[in-house]
Image 1 (cartoon, rainbow, N blue to C red):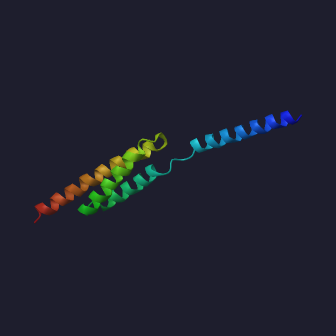
Image 2 (image 1 turned 90 degrees about the horizontal axis):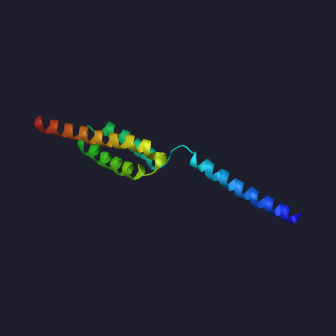
Image 3 (image 1 turned 90 degrees about the vertical axis):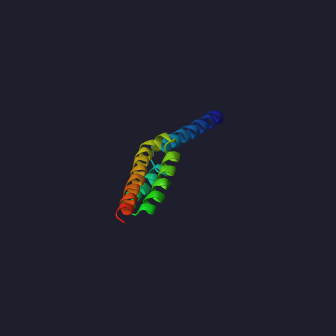
Length: 102
């Protein structure tokens, strides 16, 4: 009788661990992908200020490249990479425009 209880306890423990792992796999993407996307949006907003656009754009590219390796964050990371590149291009455009207007 005690053996059945011990077997059930082990089976219950294994089942609960498997459920926890499955729940962790189905969580919404958080972490570097989300942070990279937020920084990318900020970079695009401040990109008319050339130096800020370059700095935030490069930070976004760095965060996006590290996050794209994780499958659950790859979509947000790709969006962040595009935002970072766009911020750098816009910052370069405004920098060139500022020099040409002098």
